Image 1 (spheres, rainbow, N blue to C red):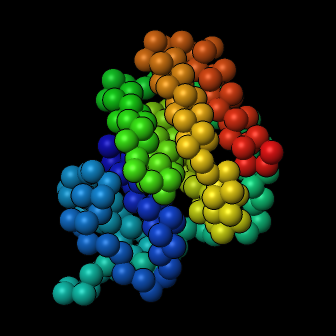
Image 2: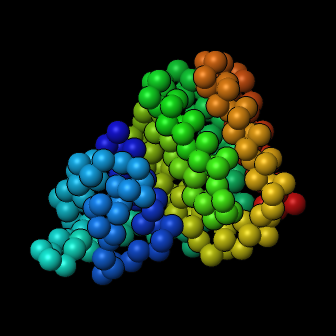
Length: 211
């Protein structure tokens, strides 16, 4: 759970463009928005403080003093999608082998929030959360840190333009169909099907972004 909470907080800071010197949302706000316990959020912030990434001031809040390495400018969307095509289908096989029932439940919860999203922005948030939950279910801290670079790239302005251009109810439903296929394969512990479903999803996203 701790690793998952950390990756969610890091992703949220990237999505909201929090820069060194900016104040982080309060613990309670982070816990509510990410649907995590305050104890889990506090533990991650303690880790950030120990790593020199944030500093706390009584009565003022927690401030970012060192952001994650910003490599997004050197990562083109096409390059990122090419890497995702190589990486994520293989990760899907590992998820089938390593995911706990709690991991599978978390993936399903995020995908259901995608289904229930009332705006494209909400869908995008929970889509990202679903993919992070899948990465976490592989139980590889190194893989989780590597995937953070993908999240960084997807938060850039060029990505925003591409996603808005492809945004439509048809696109959302298409992605959700992909999600359902991926989740069903994971639930059924079928590595071959999970790999194929993930590959089909990445190729679908690529076509809609660049087609």
